[in-house]
Length: 324
Ligand code: ACO
Image (cartoon, rainbow, N blue to C red):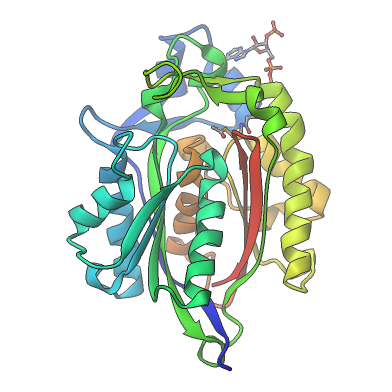
């Protein structure tokens, strides 16, 4: 029987044009550029304009991924959007993006795993493609976290920004794909930690959108151990070694977490893709934005083994290994 794999055909990222620097934030809350840069590595973040929605950012990233793949919107029959900041409570942002791209076939839905949403979305699309239910998927991470921040809380508002990233995944017979494709995936959640990072509103509780709340130093402690565990599991599932990884493309939450995970795994810092200084934590968009940046500047090349990982609210975390 023919075996199939999901192959990454193209990647694209999009950031809104409005920029908010650390110095801008220092005029809004009791903070400094020095504190933010030293504790997080973040220098600036991008903020969606009034009326600019998560789906707008997602569509822009999707168009770039399609261009990179040499494909048209109508080549897509599955859209999975990872987001915690959808345009509406319903319908899904995926269907809004489907309509904006002019796609009239296939299916689309949203997936909620907060900052680790893109890893969960890759896993979901990969399963659909390998099983043969769809041929080509747009996997999008898109967020407007600026809309759920408490702009008077210096411990959270300095960390996040808006943006979107997307990839095209295609079902290919293994014989055609060679060694390319999604090689290993590990996903985990543990709801006992939900109070460490959450939004204090929602349709069924407060009938409001709510604001992000986080016990940052506690999340930090969980992040390094849990991410390392997931990376080892994904690499083990693929039958590979950590030393085989060409590029480590982590969730861009905090430079100190990126460096600590790389050190724990024995990964050379030169192999770590960091865009945290440029756009802060864009939640589900951060991994595909970093992957797009490292692909566009020529670091990530066809045939490279790329490790993606993330942790966020839930807690939910995971890792995936892809030969691009
Ligand atoms: N400017 C100046 N001082 C600040 C600021 C600020 N913006 N924010 C907090 N402080 C102060 C605190 O009040 C505290 O002061 P105190 O000692 O007088 O009480 C001090 O700085 C230290 O606070 P900590 O929270 O212990 O600082 P820490 O070094 O842990 O850094 C941070 C905080 C950046 C939030 C870090 O803990 C972190 O990155 N955590 C992980 C975040 C993460 O990965 N989240 C997961 C993904 S997000 C998602 O899923 C939505």
